[in-house]
Amino acid sequence: MTGLAAASTRAGRAAGLTLDDLTQVELTWIEKQVEHWIRFGREVREQVLDRRRRILFFPPGATFALVRWAANEHGTVLSRLDILRAVAPGDACQTLPTVRPGGDILLRVDGWPKVERMLQHIDAIEAASIDPVAVAPDHWRHVHNRFAAGETPRAYTMQRHRAFLLARRIGA
Image (cartoon, rainbow, N blue to C red; front, top):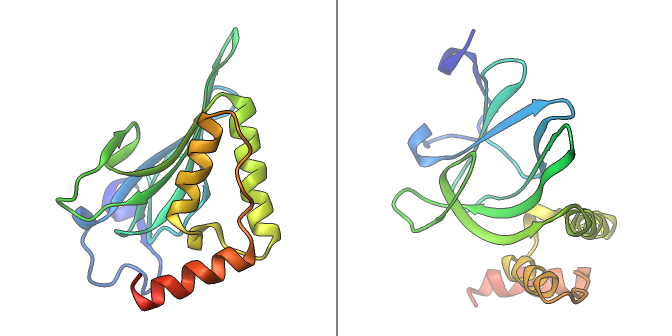
């Protein structure tokens, strides 16, 4: 079964949203050729297209990390990690392959060495008992800028996370 008939909704998580309100991310997995996956994020719906492809749906404001890797007979041809925030319908966004309509790109790294360092950075955040989905968007921008300049980003600590949560609560 394909199409919307095969879509499964996570109970109670997509209430009040139509498919047009959600950011769609198409994932493909063809072993050792094309591998797209979500490193972190909370989708509200999943649609299985076939055994190699599926679409995940994210509500506006949701943060997620998309990893894309591809190879041919000569080796790796694409290695990229993007951290995006899903946008609301009509909001300005940057386009990205496999992401409809696009998203607010918080971080983008290209090349396996940088992708690997970024995956280690995400692992360190999780080791500090912080869900990467809840990390301050400005931290991802900071990491992007530091990587682009060839510098080491600051660690995201529980103290920084608490400060972000308090600032968000008071509307700062």
